[in-house]
Length: 498
Ligand SMILES: [Cu+2]
Image: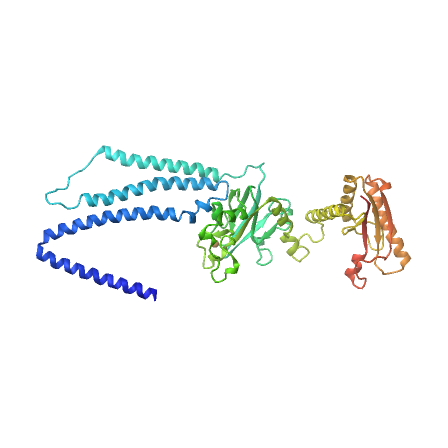
């Protein structure tokens, strides 16, 4: 309906314009050609000046009115350390081009008015003026030099790589049609090697080399989460065509080129929550996020930083959006601890694992972290005595000989007993229910004793230790299944005095 009305109005306007021009033509015939041309020229000249005034006023007014929607102004000021530098260069360029724009528009329209046709006035013949040539060559050259030099200074600053000895969080973004794989380095803070020949879709999407230790704790994240005020280096690459890694709110933008890794270093300075605070109370951001479903909340409440691909890389280009979260250091650590290594969850002990028989550093370290976490929880609990199950101590079948790989967990025990000289500990041995109860009793005794021996031989005072065997008593799982039995064959570590 509205479209129809607008169409009719336009049609009427066209008809009116045609009619007016017919009337003018007719009257010019009556009044004489020259007279009417002068009149038309006068009218056009006045209209041009009016248009110029309206145009400039609207241009300036609309840029002021919409400034809070534009990157770099109002709430959309840069959320990274270097962002202000880039915005500064844009603003400097805007000042110079803005001044030139306004002056040239005024001159253009004013000259059309001032030098409109008048009877008896003749145009000046003007062929050359050196001074003018100097001015209009020199001034733009000077301004261009200022802009280029300033831009280069900022470019060098923004593109500077991280000095070798400086701490940085390095992550990797690999673009493909159509998505990003975001790889984090894991606990060792080092990204593992890649080889494109190792890429197998669905199995090893990035071609990580599994014999490289650094890969064992790397994980691929669904979203980008980063701590505030920490320097981040993003390795940027692509698997198929050109993509572009673009984080508009941080003024981070870099091509992702297949076969030619690039990088961008930046420091986010505003957390997602702080950025939302900037948006509240602004009409454009307090509008519903989805007008069809007000229960979702406002645009401000649903705000997220985002990663977009800024290269038109194909028909699914738009779907390369990823959410970016900037959080506090504690939230980041918490998030990190919940991420699962790609290798350990997808490759370990499968046909694709070249390290099948070895116990890996990444496993030793994760067992160690888990052990210390449990120990600290036990120490903080109010119970006077707490038992910890030692999940990574194993014996040869039917004997009390510790397996070689048990030493890692045993060394963890040595360390906590050294660090906490006040605690007393009881080592408890348990078996499953297979076989003769008295044999089980004896086996559990000697297993507990061999753990105790290990501890005393590594400098722990025997007075602080007791070793007891409980045979098949107190099962922690059903003895009807193989897994249950394996769980019941165990060593526990009971802190009897804190
Ligand atoms: Cu893309």
